[in-house]
Image 1 (cartoon, one colour):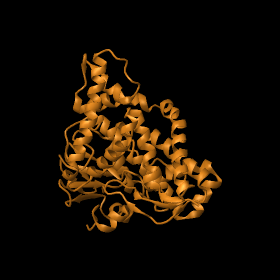
Image 2 (spheres, one colour):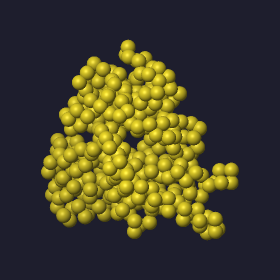
Image 3 (cartoon, one colour):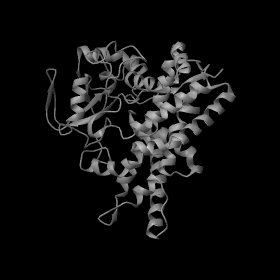
Image 4 (tube, helix red, strand yellow):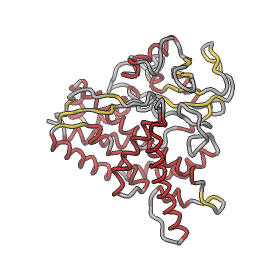
Length: 387
């Protein structure tokens, strides 16, 4: 069929293709990428694949290319081990303890934006908010924060690039920086210096059978936390604000009743999931909808299309703040359910409450533009007027 994630109208707005996939081609083969991949779009198929980790494996990465098993982007037991190391930093209590810091940072960024009168909500609010929080959680030195934010952007851009080699030099610089951070913490631990209370130190100094963890595995986990704890929340915030401001009465409803914020966040996650989908790798031939996906194939589990499946969601193409809660797939499902889901929800909730309280007359200047990687969805720019 004519659908492709790289078709110009689909790149402009991926929703242009959901109906085609769901109605005509629930198992689609895309040859416009190297390697070619299949796409599953129906809610039942995507949910079943997420639960069936033996057939739909993560052993060669959750991106569109085959990669070695690293950190948390693989199958149990390795996934379970590395996820367990960081999960204690993402418990509900630990995330709730971040609320005052998130609120203070949001207020600071909003004050700067308001003083200008207008600006780019992405660059000046939605991007710095989560990246500062994840950098502080990891323990990145304050003086390196601007460079760290830049590298975060580079990591995201490289994920879905047709030619990721154009980002190789900057990716290498980022990995060298993080490697030096890791080694400095290990040297301190070996000298008996009291370790800092941050996630990077915890990973760097953890011992398994009296040995430090493999350096490349720890760096992979840090990289996964950076991308997962930053870009997805940035897009959640910009997507939600964008949809609310497209119809100003929606924004005014939130201004008048801030307690709607949880409903706004969940509907935004369903309607505009920041991750359109992630990949799995088939370990055997799989037949669905009369089509066979061969063993050893990359398969895109299309969360965004599944979230518009009319068999699950009534009037699925309508952004409805009052929609009754149904379980969307924006954060995945099963053992790989997004580790940072609670943090993303808290940051988005605080961000929207703060914007509604301090910038009640917020308005779009234009719709900006989408971010680049084809399996992510968000605004690269979102120009707004504050008064």
